[in-house]
Image 1 (cartoon, rainbow, N blue to C red):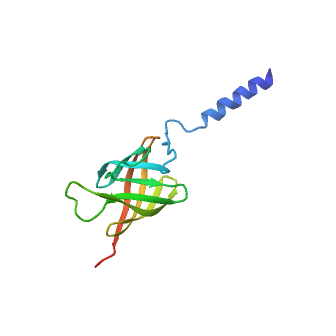
Image 2 (cartoon, one colour):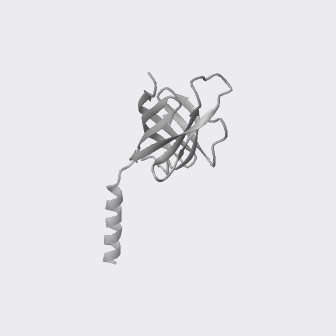
Image 3 (cartoon, rainbow, N blue to C red):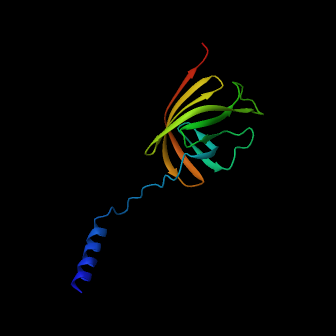
Length: 137
């Protein structure tokens, strides 16, 4: 009986030491998979999980080996109808920070994203840093 009471007391003490009221966001498996850009703001974007990227939509395909595909506009003209193309890139993740290095029609983009909220089907990102390097003068 004493062992049972001691075990119960230990569990109560242990549970009282745990953080209360602090929720750590579930970062899920992001970024692995196919993600369509649902909305884009100056300082962030919202992505939705897809089985594949529909033609002429913006998005990313993240592979487990650190490689990725950036599907973006195929030229400098953004007048509708917009035509997209797939450009290669790489990615790394450290905690809730994603670093991407990807091609686009005019050069390369290096960005750093912070995962704000993530589920299996959507992710909200804050763009912390964005650097464009153009292939032409």
